[in-house]
Image (tube, rainbow, N blue to C red; front, top):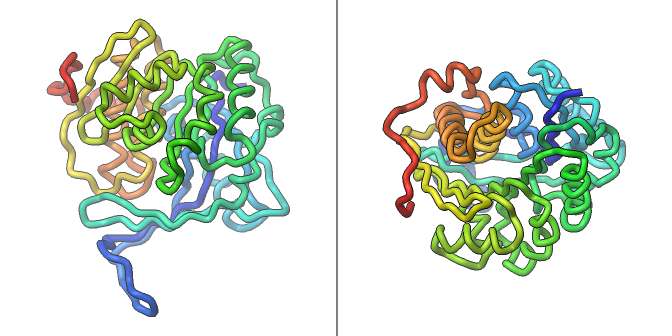
Length: 321
């Protein structure tokens, strides 16, 4: 049993680009490159941890189909334990078409598939006891796990001695009320909440990043780390200290999975005893490697290489982002 457990959504990503505009009805667009890769927040976090050198167990659901076989084979090849992966005979493996623009930004077309069928009992296939970290990645797209079941799972993990981490997926059509209904039950059981700024704004109903992290703390999260893209991260710790952790600029090739890779770096550092600020800096560094290569996790080197290549011009500060 590994001391890090990841519970979350999965997908097979079909990445294609550059694609800067969608074809009209009956139209066609061509792209210069395409890639088939593992995806979904839960899988991305687990794979990024494995690439950094930190083995973990993964709980997710795939279909009994070729895409599910592809995911399991890829996970096992990377050293991610698949004992908690449920093969569901009644639903298809999720997939995502990722249109990557010439600026590295991306748009998605997603089939939810088995992600809608991940449930609290799936996590009972592996023990919670003995874990140092339990990460739920992909909240808002796991309909049977979101809400009270996630809250119960995180509460049980914390009671078993684990540090709990929660990350979300930006579902832009859902209003603030739906975000709160889904996430408010879980936040009091979260040690580190790590949403993107867009997700945090939707949940908090605030716009200014500092107001956002304060609102999320008020909603119960012990520590809040909001990912703010090429500006790095904004951290508010349990003592109420707020710190902007900037990142160094990088020319993005593909930003798919950058937030998931940030979370993997964050947890990797925390597991090694780093402070929350130091962990956010490593998260930034891992995300920088992610966006430099097509695919969510393909650009992640071993941890020692990330540390060796860490820029020296992104020291944390207390300035506003």
